[in-house]
Amino acid sequence: MNENREEKGGSVFLNFLAGMGLGALVGAVAALLVAPKSGDETREDIKHATEDFRNKANKMVHELSESSEELVKKSKELLEATRGKVQNAVEAGKQAVTSCREHSTEESEKSED
Image (cartoon, rainbow, N blue to C red; front, side):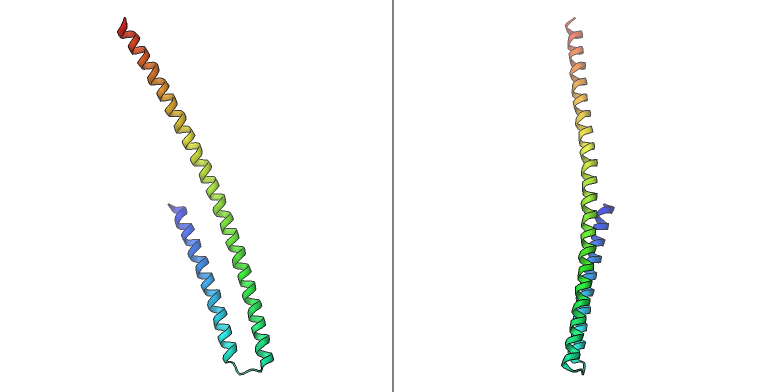
């Protein structure tokens, strides 16, 4: 249950970062378009804003990749732990059935005597 909260927290954080990056880009473009500059200066500013956005997007993709790798690792660990528990439970069930059969056989032999 705690892991589920961590996953949601990571997702909320990534959504927040994506929204913040998009908001920054929109704000930068809006500021460039209304600023009293020459066309060359505006194009240069847009170029820089685009490069900044690309860098931020690459960083976010990298962080998302790391987060997904961590989730895959945790999922595999959980799967292995669960598999072990299920195998132990199945083995215990088999032993219980064998024990019941043996006990039943002993009881039926006693009653025949």
